Length: 480
Image (cartoon, rainbow, N blue to C red; front, side, top):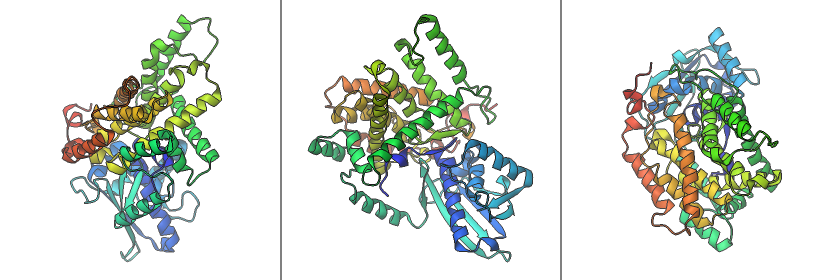
């Protein structure tokens, strides 16, 4: 199907869309196939091979445990953090995996755990560095079912041997869209010919598969999960898991910001009031809170990936609390801002997904944080009244100044530099939108040119800097 807003903004668990959500989704698909094949009862053996980046940084990203849950039948968009903890504890205690049966029963109990997975970090399969192969055998060792999947970023998966068919299906489904586009130039052309904004073009296309009410309700639900993610994060204290001893900062920062507001506006009764003087501190807080929750394996929204999940919520928070006129906005007005912002951001996300990549393992962090910053800048420019040309300019500025960003997380954990990087990229997005709005929409470098440059930069980038933990901060900073 054509990439839509609910593909780019999907609900899952942390810490990584490509290394946690994608592998869990692939494993769940494999389990469903096995169950429907009628061979499940004959299964006596299981083998999981992980290649490239999945093998190199899988332990830090929770790849192996996510696969165990997927093999039990859990899907990332449905499982809750409490269920994650419950099932992983049960597997660890019993030493057994309930293959294709933990959700609805009827599975096969196999003695299998993380230690049994085969890791091949130096072997990169041709399609993508995030490769995984699942194989089940019967009592005689004969293969009953096998499949290879690739986690290509943002939770998206592709099955080996079906790449061409998937691409053809994508192209066919795009023909069914009222206003299809692949490039920013095509998108701007649609806006000009139809007299619509970028967000409205995306909305028209979404209506090809959903009603207006479903789209609106779905996007407001997406934002409610973002808000819930922040709320949960602000209640956690102590250190993030993983051994780096990274301290959670969001709860303390939140308390300090509330204290500043109480001290300076003691007579103000509005609990939603945010002193404009501290807009950047609030933006930083939201980005940190989301990504600390993601690093904890909590429930987050891919935006468009988990590693960049804090940028769009942080910039959207700015739009709702600090954009001109929002102090007098009704709840209906605020809901409109959320819907328009996410639709516009998604339209730009489609451009990156179509022309380049949103996978850190494929093009470095420019594909994750850079894409998210660009999407957020576009969303903010649109809700602040920007023309389609200004919105495209905002997206271009944000990505232009994220080009070449490497993915080199220490210990393979989505913590350093990932958490702070989201806050920095959110501020970049806001500045990019403001710069674009002060212009008339004309600019020398187009968004399409920047996207192509990002793709080519990622292709030229050493694999050491593409989520392998073999270069940069990952090797130059002592973990303990």
